[in-house]
Length: 421
Image 1 (tube, one colour):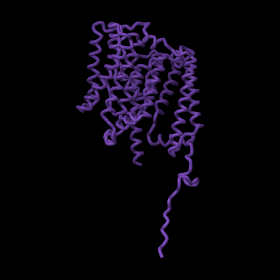
Image 2 (cartoon, helix red, strand yellow):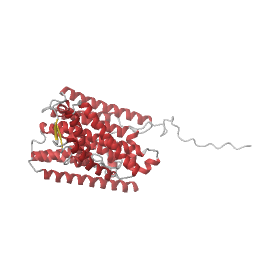
Image 3 (tube, rainbow, N blue to C red):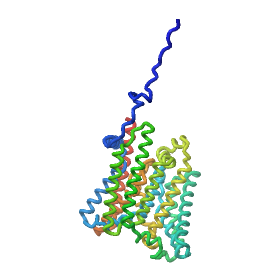
Image 4 (cartoon, rainbow, N blue to C red):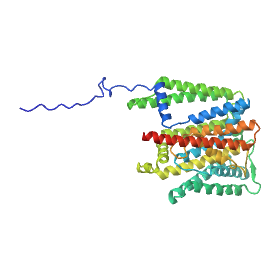
């Protein structure tokens, strides 16, 4: 007589309503989000919190010192003045994410402005063609940087330091003896940078569209997570987040419309920020950039084409630097020997770092450029209203930069110790 076969425990079935596998994941509510955020903060992931807090402090202090600081007229000017350096800072974010640096962004922006002015004014080419040639030249410069780094192994610090000096000389050579070229005030570039503002109805429409898109993308992502059996944000939380965005941006638009409104150039900058944010957070290439910056050797062993990622980062940085130079020339209606010089180079790098992009690579977002440049421009605008010398602006900006890097270093050390624990 044979013994009955042993019955093995098949484990919980997915279709069993009493089984953990059969239970639907509970939507993540506000309490869960706060708990998760608290855990990230304890682990050293500060995100955008320090720069947001710093921006609020700067605005409060400046408003106390000069009541005109938060006037709609000054905030409109502040937004427009932030764009050229902010666009350059977007490119700096790209190279910092992959653990590299570009010290020549100021020189490339000045070179782009010079090429635009010579081709558009002196040579009579259409403005769009002059801009296209300048952008192509900048992209070529970024590609050359990457080739020297990838093939020869020269550190990006040295390569771009040479570019800073060399392309400054090319800029001076292109401008020639006169040293300055004025752009026509009635040209599309100048009017775009100085005079074109959104009609109020269009500004409110874009705000409403942004809130709808935020809810739609959040709902789609939550649906994907639920299908995968993961916790997802509740619809109430998604709706609350979208309504908060609608109220906040709507109030900002209403306040700016008390003066001239929202400039098209600032909208263009926001579009670039959102586009880069999408690339970094929703595409395989964006994840590859974080992987290369976080651990280059691990990314290579995981199959990431490291050289291609580095090349794209350098090309993006140089191209965006040229875009910033073109917008700066359009804003000033001129390109001269000082274009891209002075503190443009350091302010662009400082804006990316102050906004939360790590100098060690692998951490940062596109919004770092937006928030960082708002901090720097707020300091500059406030001190200008107070009639203080530029020396104070350099000292305050340097102190803020040192504080941002220190917070990044402390957060990095906290993440390492938290991971070991």
